[in-house]
Amino acid sequence: MSQPDTKQRILNAAEHLFSRDGYHATSLRSITTMATVNLAAVNYHFGSKEALLEAVIIRRLDPLNEIRLGQLEALLKKSEETEEVPTCRNILRTFVEPTLRLRQQGADAEDFIALIGRILAEPRGLAMTIFMAHMEPLMNRLFQALAVSLPGLSRQTLFWRVHFALGSLSHIMRYHERHAMVPEGVNIDMPVDAFVDLFLDFAVAGMEVTQ
Amino acid sequence: MSQPDTKQRILNAAEHLFSRDGYHATSLRSITTMATVNLAAVNYHFGSKEALLEAVIIRRLDPLNEIRLGQLEALLKKSEETEEVPTCRNILRTFVEPTLRLRQQGADAEDFIALIGRILAEPRGLAMTIFMAHMEPLMNRLFQALAVSLPGLSRQTLFWRVHFALGSLSHIMRYHERHAMVPEGVNIDMPVDAFVDLFLDFAVAGMEVTQ
DNA sequence: GTCTATACGATGATAGAC
DNA sequence: GTCTATCATCGTATAGAC
Image (cartoon, rainbow over all chains, first blue to last red; front, side):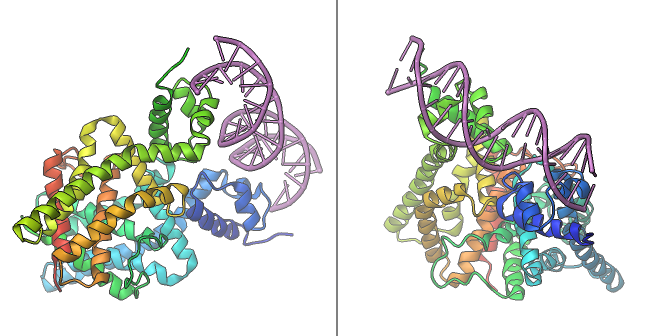
């Protein structure tokens, strides 16, 4: 009997397992078992295990980047009208807040967060190529906006500071999974809004410091 | 013929391949071929593939942590004598500088840097457990020293800021491998000293900001 | 003690018949 | 879409040469 959501069930299972165990450590058999579809269905719908990974990434990354780019463009448009340069904090917020807010959207989104963390750690991998291609327009726009907001910084300094800041973000997106080394009195599960501000306090100070 | 450096050759090959391709994507056969040893030599000398990974990690991590801890203790001892609280910058430097200086020590050390990046992205993996066990004493000491240096921060805020800062570091340790998305006019290969300062400017500002 | 050659059972991805 | 067969490769174990 035909099951119209076969593709989605495969995508969900693959997202979960790729995130939890990594691409190479996940077998097609475990994916198709979890999705309750036949082993060969992956090849039929996606062509290969690699193509399945790409589909998993794109399904969530593109909508997320649309939100991030939309918020950034709205901020820049507003600043044109008011003729005020947008602040570094507000620019970074358009990137950071939609990202951290993924956590509120359930376990599936958390899986995706972990998957991105893995991708960023495998520089030479196939997934990295896919990821970079889909991030580049947004990154260029972000870099450009920050250059206007922080005219005192050299391109070199700005470049590295952007990566310091986004590196922090990618690191903490993975951190909630590692429950070791958490001192007493520290709450790992903060409300998203508070966490966004906690992060922006840190990142903006580092971006804006003059030296 | 006896080859007294068989273990080292296996370790070198494993470090290189684990770093480049990841643990699961690396086969024992590719390691033993690169090391020009017999397939069974890994099991003979290390017991299993997992035990080999642990040996690869420990060989470099323990000496590195000895250097970092030694510099931190020296700083704290000097501050006791002069009765001055060490600065956040100097505390962080004891962690950051030996880490970034690994790059100067040749291609092998660069492999290890990439491997650590991979480990940090696989929260639930075996390697993470090994890594955490060997990092914990140093992390506790670092956290304690920073708490004294930044008495105005809550434990919660300090905890997250330390992870923001070290997250930046782990991210950029991997970055040199990804040559995409580097704007013109940006030099990826900076001298280590300059890069340490560039990083500390960012991280210290973020650590110290009051709000 | 070290190392080699070889074999084993499990699991990988994929292709082709249906 | 599914089922089954196929074949490569995996980590590991073992027997024996040096």
